Length: 238
Image (cartoon, rainbow, N blue to C red):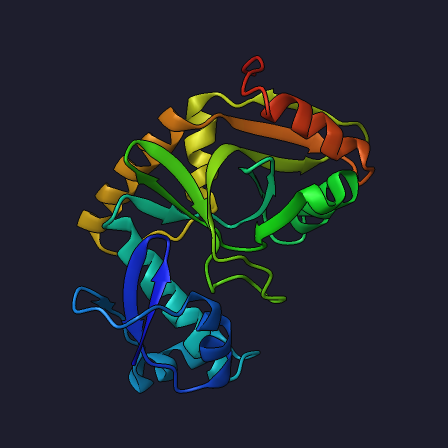
């Protein structure tokens, strides 16, 4: 087993295949007696096969370890969000949407707009965690198809849920709509007690960061519209 520092947690796990080991490398840290031990055993991979016919066991191990980490993260005031996280001026902006809607395409527009002043923190499953009263976004090894991530933590400026539109506009989401959207784009544990903790974590996210609905096209203007509102942290609720 090896130790890794992910989202300010020290965890220990072994990799039987190459993908998990390779993507975890940049998160390596010294051994610690306080590390949390995570595991994926052959029985879990076997049980996962019928519902993942397009994957090999290498990717099954990678996905199952991500699930194990994000469930453990809930116990420490955190959660995963299915989103692409872009950083500008040391603040993270998260864009979430169902697969295929264009969240990664949108953050690529930010890279075009800001050039070397922007980077992708995590392109698929950034971690969110409250530490000392501040809500941070984190890169993690669990970063989607193209493994775009950085081993950093960055204060979170806001979260926007993307909807395709011919024109670009952004508005603050009402709280009941925001929590529904967050729940739809995070990992929901089967354990009732852990689910209750997740809801508490969601409540902290809602209190500490604004949530937006971004209606946008794929023109670079969409990035400008989103940034100008989200960097100020204010706009009217729907």
